[in-house]
Image (cartoon, rainbow, N blue to C red):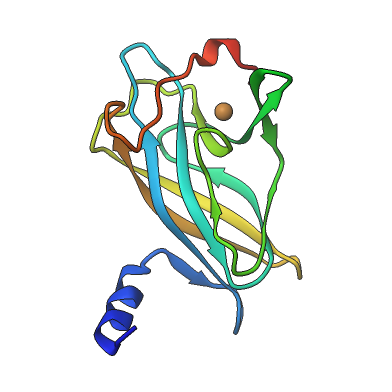
Length: 160
Ligand SMILES: [Cu+2]
């Protein structure tokens, strides 16, 4: 990486926070799955990277009071999701959320989030030493038809 690229990369790492002298958590590629009329919940996805082992212990957003951390799992041949209290983030290994894995569930939305809308999310981490810190990101709402967005799921059949 040359110098120009390196400084560009640093400038784009806007959503990072320094915990201590060494540990740093970076959240990138945050996005929210587009919604259809009548839908009251959707998923948010991102990639979390930390220089030290840490734990995601909470997520909040001004768009709704009910924000949960979820995990998708195959239970036999049925895809189910369950809420997680926390999620361990290993050191220097990007942890990617995805429609078939970890996601943040925005529940009880008063109205569907519109495509292009920017959804603020506040992620709270707790380091191994017990120190809490948070990272704020803005997740863009993508249309359901965009390739990166998965097919809509029928959450009515999933337990929350
Ligand atoms: Cu979920």
